[in-house]
Image 1 (cartoon, rainbow, N blue to C red):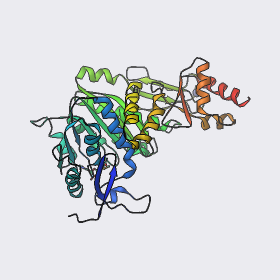
Image 2 (cartoon, protein in one colour; image 1 turned 135 degrees about the horizontal axis):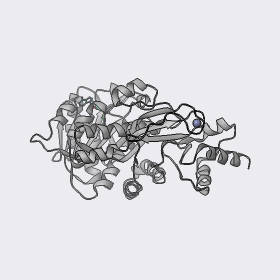
Image 3 (cartoon, protein in one colour; image 1 turned 30 degrees about the vertical axis):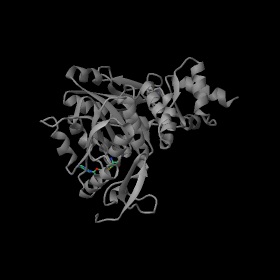
Image 4 (cartoon, rainbow, N blue to C red; image 1 turned 90 degrees about the vertical axis):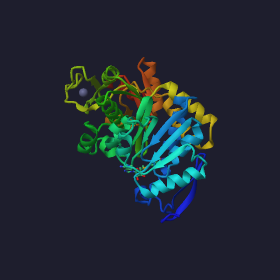
Length: 391
Ligand SMILES: C[S@@+](CC[C@H](N)C(=O)[O-])C[C@H]1O[C@@H](n2cnc3c(N)ncnc32)[C@H](O)[C@@H]1O
Ligand SMILES: [Zn+2]
């Protein structure tokens, strides 16, 4: 039936055919006859949990323009119970054939349609007599940038667009020109580079939506291993779009004294450190608003605990996120501070408690388990480290 060897796999409630995966670890999923990456299971788990938490009992339509085997759409249908209609598309003929067979294998042919188009062609044609979707999941290998504007064109009123980026070298500042080319943003290498990555992607999504008169507001975002994902709520309206754009800005970092500054589009830019007068490194434009709310994370966790055993990995990440304050910008890995001060590293949890004891805001972050976030100035952070190391 297929011109390449396939195997039956199980993930969540789905059973599906994928190309036969090489037994060697570290194979490139994009070199397979059709794309499948078992390591992206957590990304699929979190998409399921997010949609359950966000849409609750409503009925939705979804579009997965870059679907590979179709496992993501099938899992969303089977595990959320929310989907009336799903369109899973892939430009690869092999992937398209797999999606059709996998829909049958899971008895969801009545809900899942397969198509074999270029993602941009598919998405750009929506709205002209063809209904838009409540959820669009843009999940490419690499950057989602070239699908973003049409991704938003595929979004209906009050919908969600979720996008993955795996090009972390561009987003974290290792390849600044690639970031400028794809995301119109300039990242810099800082100790909190993963947060720069997630905020550059979120900011790019907000700005791309605004360009076509849509307001996109980040409602859930995370970064794990080799990829980051941002989910935005999409609603029409130029005024609303402009209001959200006020949360676009720059993060400035002082490499000498570690101070952090931010300024937004309407603020006066900051260029040198008010503490030590050193020139600052600036990353942006990027999103400076919240990346997720405690409410959405709590709801996702409830679904994770009340659901399948396989959500355990998602639950442990969500537990971490539950106490993360994403209105605090940036983070400090404990090793960065301890090597500057030439003292032994201290557990981030202890630093967070001590900073709170002194009246500052502080939290852990899922972006780096060895780091903490805070609004305390560098001299207070250093003082806390020194007092702990002398104990
Ligand atoms: C990362 S994979 C998708 C994985 C899938 N979403 C999942 O969760 O398993 C990206 C897919 O996009 C497809 N693709 C690449 N360029 C495309 C394009 N221009 N239009 C449609 N599909 C495309 C590839 O064939 C590949 O199957
Ligand atoms: Zn400084």
